[in-house]
Amino acid sequence: MRTLYHGSKDRITAPKFGFCKRHNDYGLGFYCTEAEPLAMEWAVAVDHDGWANRYIIDERGLSILNLNDPQYCILHWLAVLLENRQFETEYGLPSEAKAYLLKNFSVPYKESDVVIGYRADDSYFSFAQDFISGAITYRQLSAALRHGELGNQYVLKSERAFKALKFDDALPALRKDWLLSKERRDKAARHEYLDGLRKKRLPGDLRIDRIIDERITSGDKRLR
Image (cartoon, rainbow, N blue to C red):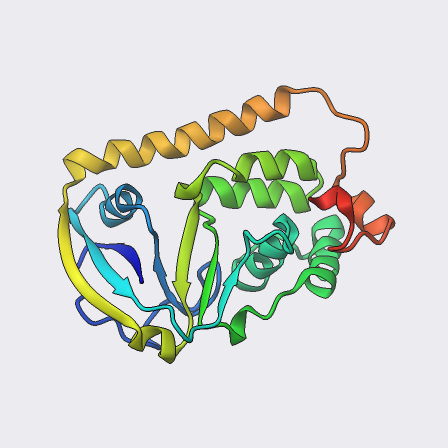
């Protein structure tokens, strides 16, 4: 059993498969977190309060793809993101990077009941865009994303997963309490990112053009 939260402006007592947004990080699915504070932040906006809907999921019998497992690396996450989010990849290096990552780092996330992996809010999405454009190294991207469990999301992808989910409660989230926290989290992520950019390049640092030129794939120890 696992406790999950979904931040929304509405109470959602019975999430329905197929009624979710199709163009989020991992495609069609119900996006949750194990962190109550993060759900509170997701729930609020400048013009409304919201709810941190709490659920219990019975994971027995579910196929779970955890992109944080040692067999995967940041580029597996990025390949999923490239398939679902709108990146500027029409020409040049970003276009070549997208094709290479989709060919060499795709994972069977569509066949999974549940996907666990990094979330790509505005700040994280911009870091990924910088990487495929060649502006930052693989090490810098990894450092920007690895800020703890609050950076992860838990996504229900199948009818079987939805059936295993039970509503438990809805906790009120007030913008006066959580909007500033939401803004501070984004600023902190960007600040850590900029700090990483100020550090000197290290021998062996990988940029996307080098990854492509050397035909580096998921088994390469430099990606761990």
